[in-house]
Length: 164
Image (cartoon, rainbow, N blue to C red; front, side, top):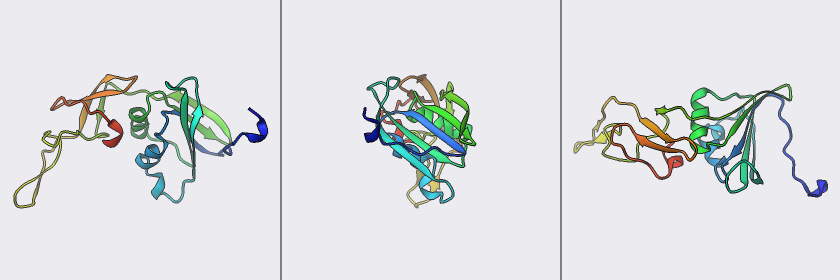
């Protein structure tokens, strides 16, 4: 490609770059990380870029200034995009780079899509919320897709991104 026609995203001094996001997931990543509500962190996005690593040959990228992700946030990204990589940037240099990896079980990140699951709160006839004190919990069946199953009701959600 002609260098004059390439679009570049400026480097960040400190923060996190999430690369190899599945195409079309960058805005969901912004949402689940709460970046739209945080005025202190500047983020940049790029969508539909060529990639040899992501199935389908396209990827998204998210750059977040002045913030490093927590392990729980990395797990959310791995549910959203199992081929993602996390790059920690300090003073414009990559100091740490790793692939996201789902654990064998997910706790409290995604809610069950089954409204009758014991992990979902219920509203009774009086309008009072009745809930079991049970956190959301999923078994990870396939880390590459990803495929998860509720530990309690065994439902396998089709679109995980809507449940995060």
